[in-house]
Length: 238
Length: 87
Image (cartoon, rainbow over all chains, first blue to last red; front, side, top):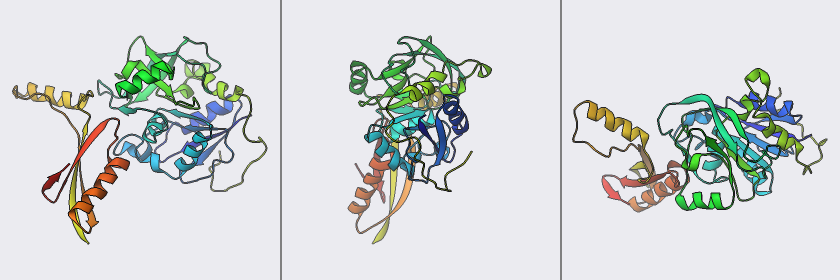
């Protein structure tokens, strides 16, 4: 059982579904408030979707400096698994934990609809239970989803096989190379623009997203004993 | 120490698509302003910075841009202090 910290920023709004999806996959998931600095021996950190700090200045630009991000960066640098979904992806880019940035959708409209993405890499903590080339139907809900990266970095991402998901059938937001999700050089930090937590059960219209959470749970070798649990009343309880 | 008024202009990188600028350009064309082209939209921030000199105010504002106000991947910025422009 993996310990999964779901970070809650002011303006996060996918935190509850993300926690539920992780728990449904068998994880010991809990919330960590953005002001905390203790990830409570997390094996995996998830930055959920939403509109942290109202997307002021740029999406993710303010959240990236919140107190908890010091611990998240440390966790990532130590090789710990980190997943950013939607606003979480934007925050990871702003924090420099992932390359590139996310800009206003090419056709400006806020998009809230299913899209299709192809799994391009199964060699990450969040895609190991997928087949390479599998096409998933997962919804997006974003205004700033156009992934932008310098041509040199884009070429490097392709050459080092770090594009994890790619939009197929159409490119909803004008992303460079149809990129829907990327990973860092260490392949432990992953960002995805669509919302896998919104497609993890038949009742939600499909379960193409469920294996994102099952993959992290299936990963061997936790770095912390599962029974160690820091007690801190400031942490949110569910 | 005195207070300097620093203006920061943040623009999407020239090579990148600016859909907001395009939408504004289309609206201007629809209003009959056919002479307008290449409209781009950015942000304008006004800061009051306490510093010993104009140069120091600029240097601090530049550091603020590098850390927070502009995203080096997607945006360029320039600064002006108390009416005098500087890059």
